[in-house]
Amino acid sequence: MKVLAVASEIHPLIKTGGLADVVGALPAALKGHDVAVTTVIPGYPAVMAASTAWETVAKLPGFFGGRTAIKRATIGELDLLAVDAPHLFDRPGNPYVDADGRDWLDNPQRYCALSSAAAEICHGLVKTYRPDIVHVHDWQAAMTLAYLNYTDAVRPKSVITVHNLAFQGQYPRSILGSLGLPQRAFALDGVEYYGMIGFLKAGLHFADRITTVSPRYAAEIKTAEAGMGLEGLLAGRADVLSGIVNGIDERVWNPQTDPSLVVNYDAKSLARRGGNRKALEERFGLDHDDSPLFCLVSRLTWQKGIDILAEALPHLVASGARLALLGSGDRELEGIFRQASLQHRGRVGTVFGFDEALSHLMFGGSDMTLVPSRFEPCGLTQLYGLRYGCIPVVARVGGLSDTIVDANDAALTLKAATGVQFQPITPDMLRDAISRAIALYHDKPVWQAMQRRGMGLDQSWDLRAAGYAKLYRDLLG
Image (tube, rainbow, N blue to C red):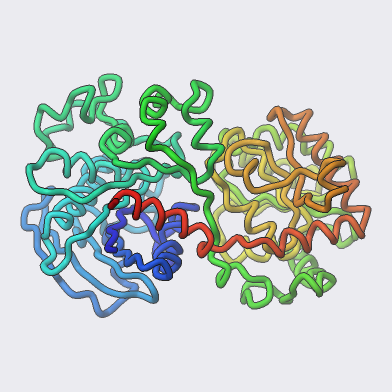
């Protein structure tokens, strides 16, 4: 079975978040289910520099304002087709924003170019290759399904995966002509969305199947509270909507072999985590003591509940605990935590930005990882925490609810607990969850049992890939 995946980022070549991890890990896991995945990605500088063996397999002259080539290469276990359009993608830094953090003004044309190229590949642009299924990820690739719809050629079956419904790709009607779509596409049963062009809306409307990254999130987005304006469409397509929990690449996220750790360890040698804790304390300027060490690795945004954590932070410090924070985002939130690190020297440490290696060390040296999100489609940090014996303290939403078993009395008695959940998502309830986690931390037999239990769970993509393989088989009958 041949599947063409379409995405705006892929690990390890280009990554801004969990989307890249999913798109990068799934192809290898699907090979064991007789599914061959080829992924179409933009030809960003980091992508083109990742191989010297790119082969031009098609050309698209005058494509979205410039010469474009479709180039093929195999990098590691990834079979890739890059849309090499320097006028659109040869830009440094973050793929979506400029150096000042502002969206590139031509983002709609850039990601429609990706989508249009993918649609052409589905129609046979690359000789000898025609997929059985096209699987698009998030708004940046969603318009692939619109381009396929507005042609008379036979098209493959289609799947769209929503990694975060909050990011939808909405643009003014006036740019429709620059996207190469017919005027009739601007309709309720097309790309129109509340008077705008809705990239994600179009993908959700035209897809044969819709998936999200956890079962609970699939249920949540059909409601007004979490549907982000798309709940009516999603409720109407409930018969083709499902949720498959994300996995992680357990070869990359493995405390026994992780080169980012100062000291490697496993579930039988938890005491060795102390070497990582010491390195973490030094990196964040934290006091060296035996008090609980919380970490947070996150975008600093409203969605992630960072303002809720800011309100609960004095309680965390007053309880004798410490916090190491890695992330970036809202400037006001960054300022709050920068000030907190000055006010609580030795108890709160911050690093603003993204540092993949440091994030590994944080999970390998901290006692708990905080995920206080207001909504969370799946979340990966709690899975990394489980894998590294770093107990997750999470809001009871979306994939956080699906992947963490709260340490209530029943779960502790049944020896099933893997973390601490809280709801509703308020500062008071987060304070309570922090207190519960600290109490558990001081009960070493219970705490270490929870660590080992989490580390023993199968978080691999091999398990999750079976769900996608079944979905594909069902589509093809």
